[in-house]
Structure formats: C-alpha cells, structure tokens
Amino acid sequence: MILRQLLAWGAFVKFSHTIFALPFALASMAVAARDHRGWPGWRVFGLVLLAMVSARTCAMTFNRIADRHFDRLNPRTANRHLPTGQISLTNAWVLWGVSAAGLIVASFFLNWLCFWLSPVALAIICFYSWTKRFTDFTHLFLGLALAIAPIGAWLAVKGTVDWWPIRQSFALPLILAGAVFFWLIGFDIIYALQDYEFDRREHLGSLVVRWGPQNALQAAFLAHMLMWGFLAGFGLLSRFRVAYIVALSIILGSLVLEHWLARRRSLKWIHTAFFRLNALISLVFFIAVVTEVVFPGFRITR
Image 1 (tube, rainbow, N blue to C red):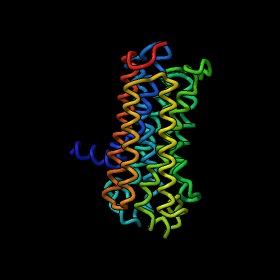
Image 2 (cartoon, one colour):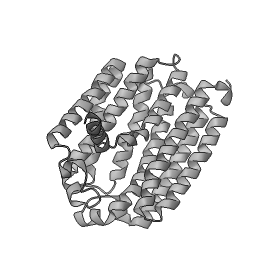
Image 3 (cartoon, rainbow, N blue to C red):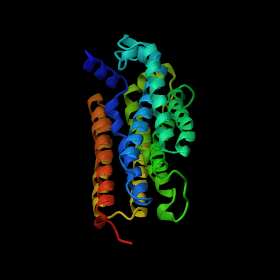
Image 4 (cartoon, one colour):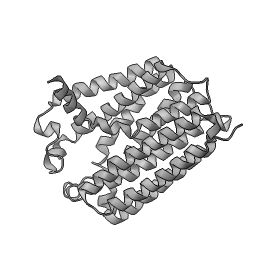
C-alpha cells in the first residue's frame, strides 16, 4: 500500500524526469569543486541533491495544480491524478509546501547566498506554469526555470560570485545555464506538438500555435544547435579534452536523431525523442564532466 502510494506520488510529479536537469547541476558542482577547494564532501552533495529534487518537485506540483482544469479538458492529460481524483488538491498543496520548504532548508544549510536566493528560485520555477495564459513564448520561461539549476549548484560550492580569473569565474555556470536554457526550449517545443490542436482551441500559448508545427520545429532545432555550441564553449573554458569531445559527438547525434523522430509527428516517437534521448544527453554530459574532473589526464594540463 505504501509502495503504491509512493509510486502514485512519483508519477504525479514525473519524478523520473528529474534526470533531465539534475546531471547538469551535479556537473556544475563538480567543476566548481575542482576550481575551489576540492570535492565538497557528502554533506554538500546531499544538500544540493535535496535542493534540486525539492525544487523540481515543487515546480511540477505547482504546474499540476495550476493546469488541473486544462488537464481535465485535454484528452491526453484527462487521466492525470488531480483530474481523476487519485490525489486530492489539498494533498497536492501540502506536497508543494513541503518541497518548497525542502529547498529553503537545504539552501540554509548550504550557505547564506543560496538561502537568500532560494525564494527567488521558487518564484522563477513556479511562475512558468502561468505563462501559457498570456504569452506564446512559454518555452523560454521553462528554459529559465531549469537553467538556474547549474547556477545554484555552483553557488552551493562557491558560496560567492567570483568573476575573475576567467577559468574560475562565474562565466562557466552561466554558459552551462545557457546550454540548459536552449536545450529546454528545444525539447519543450517538441513536447508541445502533442497539444497543438488543444492549445489552439483553448487559446493557450506556445510557439507551435504561434508559428505552426513545421516552423516551430525549425526553431527547436536552432535552439538545440545553440545548446550544443554552449556545451562546446563550456568544455573549452573548462579545459576538457578526450572524454568531453566524445560526449559532444554523442550529444550532437542524439539531438539530430531527436528532431528526425519528432518530425514523424507520432505520439510514440515524440515520447521517445522527449524522454529517452534527452535522458541520454544529460547522462552522457554528466559522465563526461565527472571523468574529466576525476581524471585530469583527460584534459589539457595547466
């Protein structure tokens, strides 16, 4: 019974999708630790993990609460937990409050900078859920919501914003945030293809509605190429070498395959492009960064 309830809550917030942004945050933490005072230890790692999972859960819960009326009308989402009553609205609000508190508490025990910025992070990640009501550029707000993850992880280790020298500066997490920003824009546009007709009928904003599926897919591809460029710049400034170059090749191939699959316009293929390939991209990136940090021989020496 308990396991069934836990699985229901995990499905409610799509806990498996945590794998998207979390590896980028942990990779940012690893590079920050390399350039700071060495590995931060299990305490910082655990607090960063708690903060990221809490933030993701908070954002997704708020999204489900805010969209519950649209989810009830949309055939694709009508069987979600709130529309069907599997989870009550009260319990959803409790989960939102607990996860928001989890982020704030974890930030408090990390450092004062993270603590004071945690309400700003909460505002950013929750605000996205309202944007489809007044703008077609809702994907940009989702990109921003996830782009703050690597910045937060960097600040968790550093505890301050250091601008110089360039290899140790705040440029690295900003570049990584830029990569996450464009990555999210690209695959959120692909995901929005599923609701093209519904969003048009309900006057909900998305670039797929604004530009049409084909033009929106071209914009998504451009966003993903920009994402790849940011990742290449991140590796260059981090002085990564062999493992990272291999990862960049795999990521580029995955992005191209993702768009080839998305153009088939089949719901099955969109799910493959959205989840499996993007999960692969984030994991490959994380493994490559950790490899470069742990084994300095894989990167250019000073």
